[in-house]
Amino acid sequence: MENFEGKTAFITGGGSGIGLGIAKVFTAKAGMNVVLADLRKEALDEAITWFRERDLPAHPVQLDVTDREAYVKAADEAEKKFGNIHVLVNNAGVGPGVKLQDATYKDWDFGMGVNVGGVINGLVTVLPRILKHGEEGHVVSTSSTNGLFSIPGYGIYTASKYAVSAMMEVLYMDLKGTNVSASVYFPGPVNTNLTVNTIATRPEKFKNENEPEVPPPPPPRPRGDRPKIDPGRVVMDPVEVGYRILRAIKRKDMFIMSHPVYGEGIVTRHKALMRSIPDEPPDHERDEVLRSFGAMINNLVYDEQTTPGAPDWDLSEEL
Image 1 (spheres, rainbow, N blue to C red):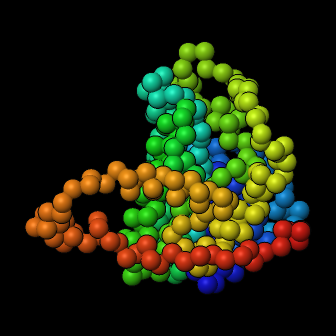
Image 2 (tube, rainbow, N blue to C red):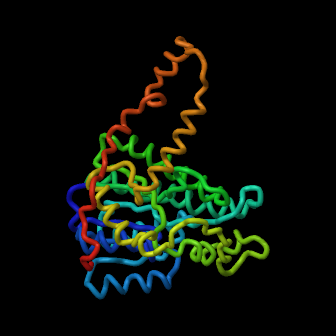
């Protein structure tokens, strides 16, 4: 997209954290209308105050992204308020932490229902509307660094975020030849209340017996020689996320990374994948058949991703 002024963004999980940071930048810096969709009414009530104090065009919609009928009504309400939707941000998510050997059906249904089902519902409900009006548009979905490599104890979360990453990569390809593009965002630590919100928004039907009402304290970790951590330097402000998302939409990036240091983790994982390739004599006949599938061997669409370069925003400038 090149022209953002007066266009409308529909942002799930928009009541706080990443979604709210994106909404602030979209309105204050890009001149967009924003629809804040969130399950938590109290979060919406608090969030909308910021926009009203600055006379910025924002509209709150209470939405459970797993409720397909409610999603249609929310999209209808957004269009009634602002007209055509141009940008869909699938950001609502939960982070259930449980070892896979201990996970229940309820754990799986909750985590996958929100993190994967919510994205699916956004694509099926909103994307056709963006394509239909024919104007420029974009879809962004929030994955995670856990959508690139795994950590123990978060198998459901990781599986869901890998799924989001795959969906958006394919969507980027499928939208070729249209006025709409797609991106997947891989955040590292951002100032959100993911753990608290995960517990607070978990429906009764998905609660296990003795489900905690407050987040358990993190297990103690040996410090070793690790330096002291300044949370303000590690945990990214959601407004900075908003700038990164806006820049990526302008550039039509497929991938949006947050912290540069995670490049090390990507390299480590892919080196392991390369080491797993069988060290066998080539089977030329079979290899030629496999190469005929094209994208499975060398998908040139990945060459379109370029380096974003240095930040082009000033975080000291108040929105």
